[in-house]
Length: 246
Image (cartoon, rainbow, N blue to C red):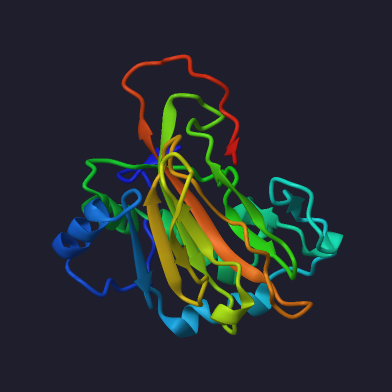
């Protein structure tokens, strides 16, 4: 775990924010059902466009198979999987993840979210490259809030950057944000190429994509996922730190 001040620098910045930080901070804070922001075209499309073709084969041994939190009707090869180790990812993908972990980018996130410091996780625990295929879904849930090791950090922000260049809204797989009691869907966000979604993370920020992917066989709903943390002022024992599934 490293703070923004300790995060390694990265040259060749490939992202550009479309609005002033002050404007984005206001939208983030006021968004419902909980603070979030959606930004399209954040990265240089030429840089991001190289990533999808470099995704490892579905039969490669580097994948962790997570599934979607419930039995799925899709074929086994289409269930959610990911790679959370920078060393096992192709250079094109790891280089973009390095940008998302860089001190400059994290400083931008602090300005948008209105926080003084965020802590990065270079182990990418639970994050990194995420992929799922036709028929896969992700059950509604609130994330574990505490980083597993060490346990002095709480998850503060989730960031998802979609990298499937030919994904269209008709393929479904929309990210859904639900009310804090998970009784009502408030927002449905198509996972379109070069779209970034960032939202506050706590034990009541329910999200998922419960509608199965309707993409062609052999197509990935692919994204980069990162979690940013804050330091806990004192160690407190909490209830189970497992996802809360709905």
